[in-house]
Length: 316
Image (cartoon, rainbow, N blue to C red):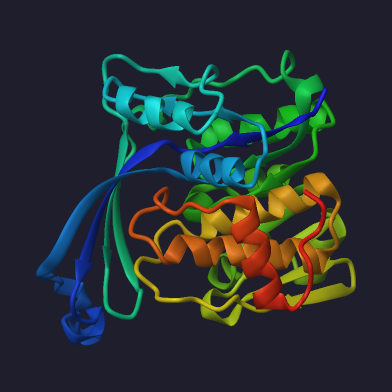
């Protein structure tokens, strides 16, 4: 039996808005203590999103079978049908019938900076999933932003059941206590963060970067347009970005990147190969509005990978 990738994370509707200017032109740093601003929006659209849903969608594009865990609300039916259309196993998603699915209201400016308001809705439920019946079918898991109680429980279960997992605290990082962060980090297969999140995590836990690397297998740091870094002990791989036709919307780029990393970990690719696959996934995402509107065939992906990185793709 081919093992699956377990994806745990938020499920949300994304309300994506584009401001045809730059935030710094309106936000005056010296007056943020009494901020009262309005951004004129040139475009607004509704999309399926949430970290869990986005990662699952991208993994299906890469041909992986996944198990998706998450909480959704009474308005989830259309999103559920969308995921199932692409072969995502939604049987483990819990539906809360008295509340709405989480919603993100995301405004991007001309430079790709973002301001997000987030309504957690069903995600606020402290419901926890039992991984024991699923464990034998799981090759690797990712614990991405969701209810903190559920994220912590998932990490503890993965350790107990010896399921390798990536810890991806994302937007929830500021809300973890130092003790909770150490619990989630300890014995993780890897931790994935952007540069700001890395500094915040080190400050909250009083760890040095060396301390962190000694507790985990991989440290993956995303750096936006500067690419990413994958560190394994004292070994470091710098990953560049792949050529982008046109940046339309940066929302969901990180989730697409994570799918490439998970594919690489499951297939035991080298750090360089998994990083390049992840980089290309991110590129596909930013070229479309929304987080689940890009698409490619395997042949298209392999040709573009070869063109971007001057090498063949690994065996899928």
